[in-house]
Length: 330
Image (cartoon, rainbow, N blue to C red; front, top):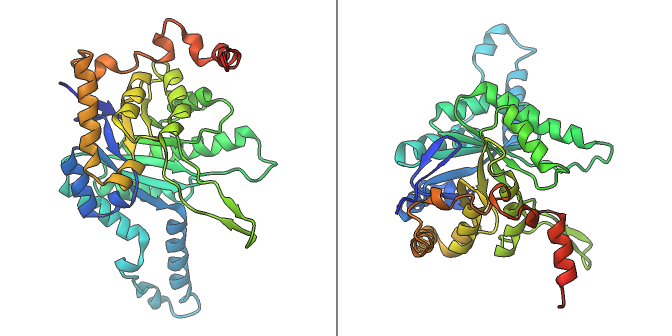
């Protein structure tokens, strides 16, 4: 049984990728995930706020000598690595890349391209085999139009693409008015892969304490449907690698995403719930499903239920919406 796949130009021994989580933020966790059979890991994100904080500290320290003698500018104090998030992150990239035999993909999380490019280069130099851009942007400015939102993504991709040679993926928001169009634009601007989708953590309200609650809920299998739709629509129509990143709990979700056209299937919540060894459960279930249907490889199954390959492609369009509503209760 050939479970091998390719994602963003990287050869993977299977399609299961451990996405960003506390488990991928430690060398021990990374080792356990690799031992369980994952084909690649996504490190936790380096946040734009961490980069900006380091730059602010540097400016403060160097600015402290502006009014003193010139020779003092060669004696700037050095912050210890333990106190600097970006430096700790680069050390994690370096050590994880040296330790593992599977691809290590770093992640940058931010809103704008400013400040990313230098760290993208440093991440590449530290040994990362790929870079995921997690552009976590919620356009709360109601005067901002849709094109301006898209441009933030395109500017970030273009800037990072110009800075590094390693493959670049974009973790895409599900809230674009034209997902297919932005996918094509990201491809034209240098992205190698799309991850569907970025899971925005939406607030709740405490009606007793009158506070905004910002708690975390792990994803559930029912959340698969939106990324499943767009994977099926994009598969075969874009050159980008496609990864699914929501709701993977059992091998059933892995199979569905592959049938829709995913090159890689990412999981976080299941590993946090069940531990790194759950990767083996997912792989065993996937291999069993392929074997019972006499598929000798992942490639034989991938994308066979994408919109471009279905005999009835309207199943992903408005016609299916009408059919579902008319058939309810009958």
